[in-house]
Image (cartoon, rainbow, N blue to C red; front, top):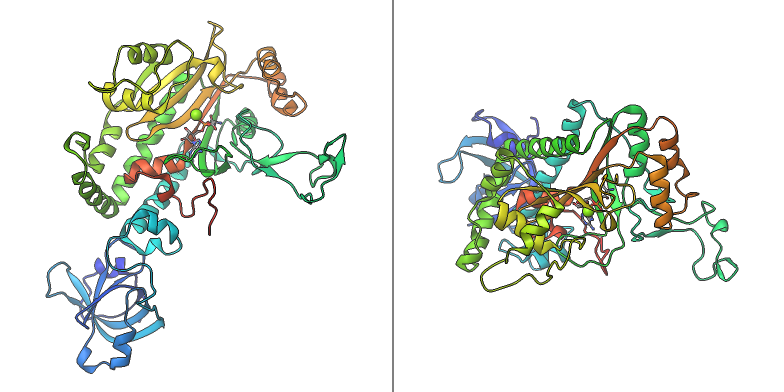
Length: 476
Ligand code: 4AD
Ligand code: MG
């Protein structure tokens, strides 16, 4: 007798077969009906216990959360709600779960409560569905790049440079912080593990560029770290980023790539996680009902995904966007919290969301931003004041992708670094690329958790990564 997953059994028509299934009890009703789940699908399999012939002590051990192994027969179900069920002949308890203490009761828990119990939250429908979707998306991303001629490269996690030049890094050191070596009144990092200051990477882009300039098309997909003190529903201190980088590609090609890629991975998840998405969609519909009428979304989750897949992303320059924003109000009563006074100001998320959700009503690619609000490596336009940057804005999320055409001209890059006090000694290798066989190249970064948020409809980024790291929180 072979062990089968709940998913396999639910799709099976091998009635009267002896089967073995293992999983965790979701509910146990009327001393008879076990709803068992093993993570293979959002659905449970019903296992029917012959309670008259089962030891009472054993029945008492079948509680929500307990790990069971059930030997039985697969039969067509007489009851409503399921096609098949298992007539249990033998129930083996692998692990008891004290019903008075087990935190995940068969009822609706708040997401806050479940965050505090993140080690058990994938025992719920919502979190197992979200994490299955997350897993599928990661696979789809590799699938996309692999079938489009990209090499997967691993960029370092520990680096000596600040790729974004924003100074929001976590320091990595092996020095004794209680008694660090001091030289000239400062901590002497020449005695540190690497002989210099190092930190956790904020982005693999700069190293990815070096590989694009020899291997053509590459991407990295790894953890990145930001010590920005943003306690919002869209920021993590540790998040995963996908960063493709392509030689001989200009900004237009970069936009085409990003759009094609996003559409592919979202179609993939629509096709492969239908039941999870249906569940999440129902959950969202419930949530929407509790909102005031005018705040309710007029699209379901699948409609939102289809909308992104079926429509062209709207491409708008920063300058055009600022014009639109100056002539708009988010709604009749209210002005923006931050008014865009003049050209050159950074857009706030209220502006980004207005453009996507109210004005264009579709994903938007904003490009050609003012140089002074973007990173040093972006290619300067001929106007001398804007750079070939692009941000992709999604409904409900805001910025989901940030990218650019890179500055490939040695002198221009050197000047830019000097103006921003970025030491050449730190990025000599990055400058070398511009000395030896430089060429136009471009890439972007997609925040993986923001993609998972969009695909699942979850409203808080803490609920789409197994163990979120945020200010004042690194539990688990
Ligand atoms: O816009 P960012 O900072 O761009 C870069 O890091 C570039 N080096 C990417 C590149 O061109 N290769 O970050 C890229 C994306 C953002 O659009 C956002 O989706 C996500 O990463 N992101 C975060 N996600 C969660 N928490 C944070 N603190 C994030 N910061 C950025
Ligand atoms: Mg950005």
